[in-house]
Image (cartoon, rainbow, N blue to C red; front, side, top):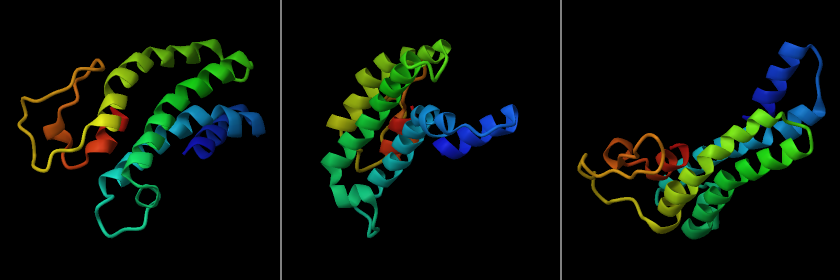
Length: 146
């Protein structure tokens, strides 16, 4: 996701390949995509599949997803400070309070419901509410992408 999309897009538009863009500037995008895909596999942790979340265990897998969500913002900040990414990238930090208040709380403390919840249950954390009934049974991937 990260290096292929960012590096390929940069090479196609600029006409040159840049290792710093390919590997460094792609970190925030890559971490965001990683969190969503990792969340999908946390949802399937009880199934008979061999995935990294299953090998790590549910608690460590959820902490890894949270680290990726927060890490994408830390990487953005550091890359702007180093002059690799432009300052407007810092607008992504506007999402940080919503992620820490809602998505991180759900990932670290709550378990998905065993049955489909009613549609009147929702979490306010971002501009759009997270409605578990719309995401169930893919709970963690929906939260990571929210």
